[in-house]
Length: 165
Image (cartoon, rainbow, N blue to C red; front, side, top):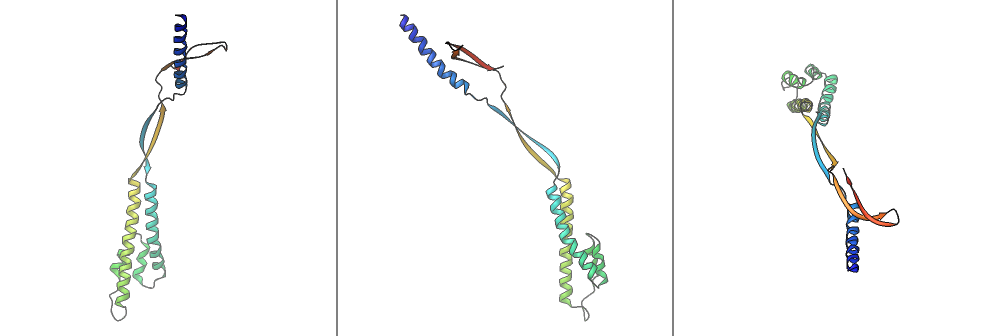
């Protein structure tokens, strides 16, 4: 009878020792929380608007500074300059070639459109807010209790209790 009792305790201790090893290696679950917050205007959109506006306005300033035609002086005015110049252009005839004047009008319209697109993109960038998403991970802080067997005092075995409280 004593042998069966000792064998039973030995078997129970063996099973508990395997389980306690699992308990020691157990990793606490993490909770994940996602936060989305507005961080300000869309600087990428503002930057692309400035680039578009600059690439269309600077050639207009160069033409306004170098042209001998008086109507081209209005190209110094941002946004409205190409449209003002378009209304003041001379009519084609014996002095002015129609092909050249038609090309100049198409270029003025293209320049005016791109200046407007650049300006609207800048304004849209300041009106559009950027949302930054942050993922926060936190450990599960619920109390846990684990029981197992282990060496006690270096001379024997006993019951160990460990956990988070």
